Each structure stands twice: as structure tokens, then as C-alpha cells.
Image (tube, rainbow, N blue to C red; front, top):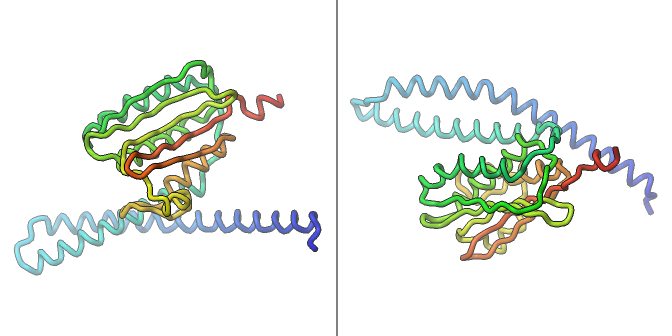
Length: 245
């Protein structure tokens, strides 16, 4: 039988190896991104030369270059999201008026959703008080959830953002009225690189979960086919550092 000390040492070694692998992959992605950007820029310049194709050969060339450019943009998106996921800095927590911040996000993104025929509304909760968060990080997670909800909601539907105090926890919910997530897919939606979208990278929701967990919180979700999906971000109203100070 393996001793607890040996298991702990093996777990620490695995964690260190994973951290090293993550650093190597992040460095590799960063090195690839620069020449990929150069390729994308030059493709755009070449496409300018074929903006008005005159011969069948020019038309074929334009079509092929357009396909390659789209793939370069897709790779750039994957690399950007991977680097965001792999190199997310430690959050710097500052007490904020959460309802005020959420209202600003909803006001800013409501026109974008309206262009898709989807309404975006905010229902603020009472008694939240100052909530310790790194707003830049949390806002990025929230926007990701809102845009996912937008993509899942048909025209005429709505996306609801709400806040609530639950004991010593602040809860932010993003709810859509879309088709819902099939039960066989639901357990996998937080897996890195798993996506049901054709253009999805599969890193959006894992990044959201990482941001929330680095705040000492938890990301939960529920879904009903034909009714919609709800994600809930649960954040401690007092951070550990404050409690132990």
C-alpha cells in the first residue's frame, strides 16, 4: 500500500510536470502566433490583388486564398484563447458594486444582442454590498457567458442576467431561452477543446470556470432541452485573505 506521504509527493510531482508542460505549450503558442499573424497579413494583401478577378484562374485563386485566410483567422482565435487560458494572471481582488458593474455590462451588450433579435435584461438582487472581485477578469467571464447565451437563443428569445445574495455568497446567473443542451453533451461542456459550435475553440467555458475558481468561487449550470440553459457564478462575499487578516 502506498503511504500518504508518497502519494502526496507523487501528486506534487505530477502538478509540477503539468505546470512545466503548460508553460512550454504557452511559449510554443506565443512563438507560433507571431509568424501566423504575418501570414494572415500577407494573405490579406494578396487577396487585394484578386479583389476583382477577371479570369477563371483568378476566381479559383481568390476562392482558395479566402479559404486559407479563414483557416488562419481560426488558428489565431484558438491561439489567443489558449494563451488566455494558460497564462491567466492571479486576480487582484477589489470590492466593487456588483449590481452597478453588471448593469453597465448589460447596457453595453444589449444592442449587440438586439441585432440578433435577442433581448438582454438585468434583474439586480438586494443586499449584496461590496463584492471582492477582479472586475476585468470577471467581466471577461461574464461576457463569454452572455455571448454563449446569445448564440443559443433564437430570434425573439431573451437572455436574463440576475444577481442575488445567498448567505455569504454572491450569485450571478445568466439564463437563456434557447434549445437547451442535450443530456449526453452536458457532462462535457467544461472540458477543454470540447465544443458544439463549428467555429468554437472549446476553451471559453473552461476559461470562465478557471476565472471563477481563482476568485474562490464555483461555476454551476443546468439545462433543459427545449427550455434553455442557466449558468451560475457563485462568489464569496469575503475573500480568505480578508477573513484571516
